[in-house]
Image 1 (tube, rainbow, N blue to C red):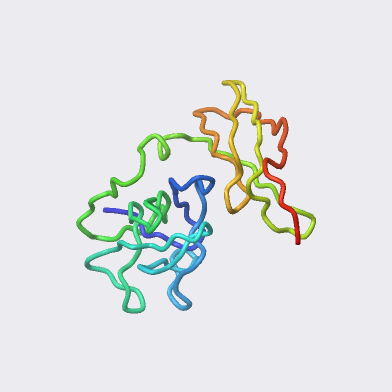
Image 2: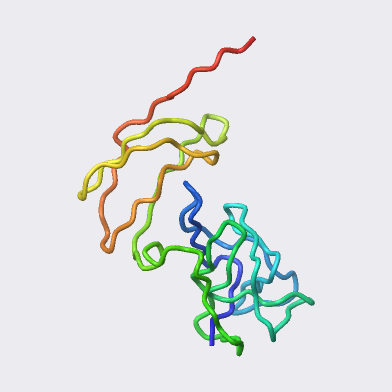
Length: 168
């Protein structure tokens, strides 16, 4: 039986720069271990919507979200309550790479400006014990996700603007 998903539980998103993030919306009046229960239609911090849920358990008239529920970004809910299981026929989502879920340590950087807004389109170099990662920050100002089975230091070696715009 799959675990019941709640606000704060993890979501693995394959969209560039989104990585592992949390469910941010849920029921106003149904709580699981003190956290709002998540349902079909609730959202994650990267903007994905939960698009699959229980076929037998409904919360506020909506299917309960489960560990393994798919999201609109092609991701999957990877966290849930340790002691609340939903008796449902469980078919895990297959739209996300198993390698993303299996990695124990995942991290990225987010570049923001002085006003707190994300900085998109900056070229960056990340240095890890396993090598270097280069790329360009996404719409949310995030670098690509660094994966590892062990805790490692990651250094943002440099980030610079790759395009220059001129205001008219």
